Each structure stands twice: as structure tokens, then as C-alpha cells.
Length: 156
Image (cartoon, rainbow, N blue to C red; front, side, top):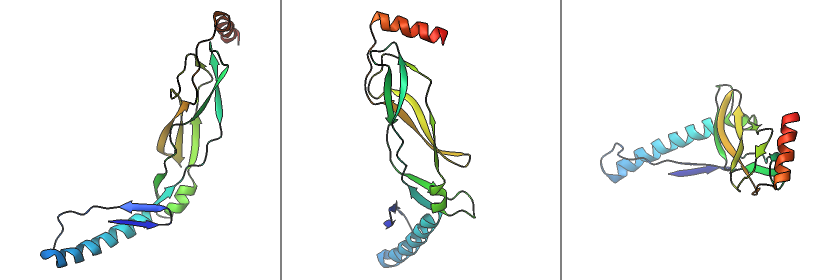
């Protein structure tokens, strides 16, 4: 069974239900499926994550001074209504992204290396954490660049 309202879709598989024969069994499956889907649509909503602005993290000892980072994926979330007075669509609109990235990273970095994370939060509940990954690679810098970065880190 699959049902869609707006951009939210639910899928259900029902096995070994009551009823004798396919006619009676189908009647029970339709009734149970309708009840299940109505419950799902009243308690959950699909949240499409807002785009995260491009970010960069300083790189120490690298051929480049910074690396761009982005979420590893932007797949939608299915969001529950956590409180009785809250509708699922209200819950979905109240989700906030919380970004955690370090003050700096050390070279070398490869494309896809995890640099931080973004947590999608509803109230005090973390619904999902998505890694922030390096968009490009950063090789080690020359010896002079590495020395300058070590000194800068020591004094600043």
C-alpha cells in the first residue's frame, strides 16, 4: 500500500491479516490500510531541509588556506508531531539546523573527508545528524607554509 498527500508519501506492507478468502481478507486490508494511512498523515510530515550556505574551514599546513564544506546529503526527513497540540506541519517548520565545525583542520584533506556536522533539531530533540564533508582536496603545503602555520597556531 502506498499513499501520497502533497509531497509526503507513506508505504505500508500488511501480511497475514484476518478474513477467510481473498474477498473478506481484502475488505480487512483496505480498512486497516486506510486507518494506518490516516494515522500516518495526521502524525507525520515530510520536511525538506533548507539549503545550508556555503562554508569554509581554515586549513593549517595546506597548499590552500581553507576548504569548502557541505552536507553529505540533503534527503528529506519524516517528522513526527511530538506534542498533542502540535501538528506535523508545524513541527516540520520548527526544525532548525545547528552547525558544528572546528576552528581549523590540518592538511592533507581528501574530497569527502568529514569535517563537521549539521544537526537538524526540533526543540530539544535531534532528529538527524548529517556529516559536513570537504568539497575539494587539500594537499600538504611546502615546508615554509607548514612552518608559518605552526608558528601562527602557537602565537595566535
